[in-house]
Length: 142
Image: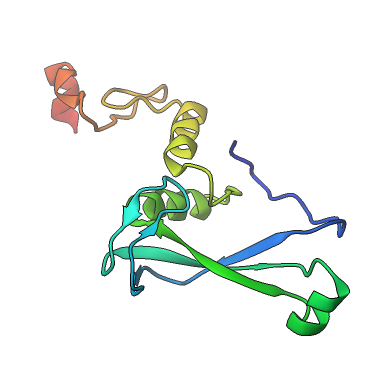
């Protein structure tokens, strides 16, 4: 579900924090990795977003060893999901990187009245696979 703001951490129990790199990276691991969103394989050498992940320590011993944050293995996001993520994040939506970005996009389309391949509620032309089914006078305005 799309949220306009992220919930505040109350300080009870555990929490996860992630941070993304500024731009796309090339996957430079020894093996392919799964996209954290859509679960598709990302091949070595392909472009992706990398998310560094941390969590709060679960015990006093872990806190003494690791400090205030415990580093976790990074998550990777494929180029298709990354594009959706970056665009929705730019609109200031709070997103869960493990949720399917395509579902977030569909929810955003539903909220905004976007109709793939047609004219939306505001009268704007939308491009898509069904754009050729529009009347000629509407297509010419595009």
